[in-house]
Amino acid sequence: MKRTSVLLLFICVCFLQCTKNLDSSGIGNYAGEGGSLARFAISGNYLYTVDDQTLTVYDITAPGNPVLKNRVSIGFSIETIYPFKENLFIGSSTVIYIYSIADPLNPKKLSEGISPEVIRRCDPVVAKDTVAFATLRTSGPCGGAQSSLVVFNIKDISHPIQKASINIPEPYGLGYSNDALYVCDITGLYVFDISDPYRPVQVKLLKDAGSYIDVIAYQGVLICWVKEGIVLYDISNNKAPKLLARIL
Image 1 (tube, rainbow, N blue to C red):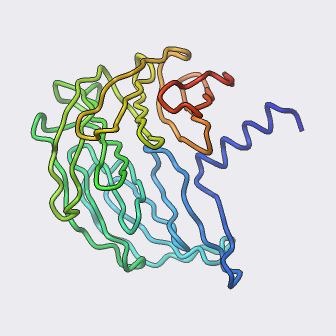
Image 2 (image 1 turned 60 degrees about the horizontal axis):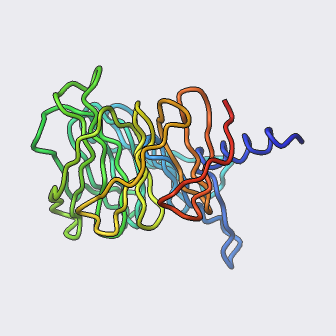
Image 3 (image 1 turned 30 degrees about the horizontal axis):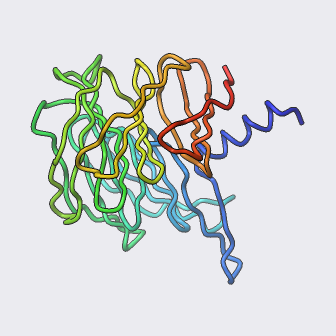
């Protein structure tokens, strides 16, 4: 198989969130490695998907025979889903919803986070420890007046509090590696130092591939979905990504 084909296969596996480990019983334990713009997530033996209004739960203990288990009405204009510990962070055009999956078959709404600055924006979201980061894009169908990166304190998961907001021209997906946050934008890829998560500091703006759409940090490599294809970076120094390859 050619090197390019191998890279493309690897990238597809990562973006489709299909890593699998076997526990001592031989039962599959699935873990997602998805991007912030994903519309489905895997946690344990369960697949969670979102459409415009609904969160759907499938049992994938037998991967070749997924079984529909539950449908939960969430709201309107649902866009993204991101799993973190025993919770799902669900982004819509107006609000970030947080659902508990402590009972995996019956997701329970814990709280919602709303940015007070504008009414309607697109909300990809990722979570890290007791902090959630979201990009709020106001262009096109998202409406609003100012696009930004916002930071929520989620130490009390039932009461997220916005702690910071940084203006960014037109952001899309985002991801992180330890204390580095990567934010995709139509103008390039922003790199922030989040050693103090409530005070992100921009350290770089990469412009190797025009418009960046979404990212996954995976085993020392930053996989970037860009308008024209895929760009890979070495992030062994996570705040100074080094270009590895373009697959355009």
